[in-house]
Image (cartoon, rainbow, N blue to C red; front, side, top):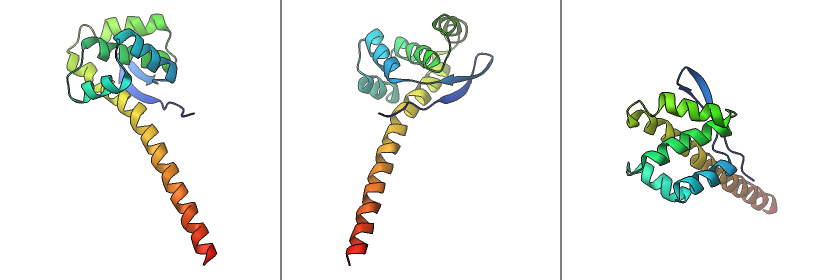
Amino acid sequence: MHEAVTHTAFFGDQQRDFVLTAPMVLELERVTGSGIGSIIKRVIARDYTASEITQTIRLALIGGGTSPEDADALIRAYVHPRPLAEAYSLALEILEVRMLVKSLDANASDLQIIAQTEGAEDAAE
């Protein structure tokens, strides 16, 4: 199965790891009441809810190794009092890493299969 990739970004007072693991994706869907595909589409279209942004960041912090209590405190300290546009950028990066890395892995697998097929065809000639 695909492993989630770590996104590191400055957040609050230091560099932090953000990982939207498979269990955190399921939790994001549960707490927002929306599927991950719908969340990503809305975030890209800038038609998101504040909850989708804050929960994406909170859950990615937890997935990156921050305790749930500390993640909650970081959201209260560095997301809630700031313009939502700042948090939006980070949430978008987290979601892009989660989706695009999987797509890149799939493309790499496709390319590997093509290369193997072409190599077999060359050997047969």
